[in-house]
Image (cartoon, rainbow, N blue to C red):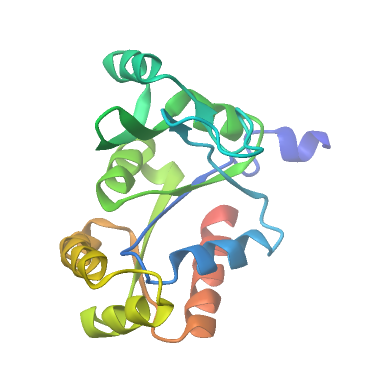
Length: 198
């Protein structure tokens, strides 16, 4: 690392916040951006679930006990967190995001709509919040059904959640409608590149 990239006057590392309803193509777009040489790194979330398979602490997740997680919540250490069901938590530790930014890494947070708004509030102009929007609820339903992985009940739950999530789109800096994937990827790349270089 040369002294130029290390100096804060050049380009300070930034945050990219992505939120979207399930099935909108968000993960595909994020993975595409990560292959474009933009020095983008995922934030590593914390969870209270036990590791699976070869998962390692600090790599896939920071694995905490439910008690440790609740202590961090009480101390206000999370940018956002969610209790998915009793004692099963997921969240983003501010200290870890700050460590990544201090190392000069641009950080991607892939979070739900409320978590995305919380992180944006915490970092202000240093963060860009992007909402990936499906072309419509019917298109989303077709995508979810087309996956063939979910029961009708699960699909209905995801549609109901998507309707709530779509109502939050106006709280994001940028809304990208993923009607055509290649177009959405190109739009995301242009927006993100300009933001990181600003």
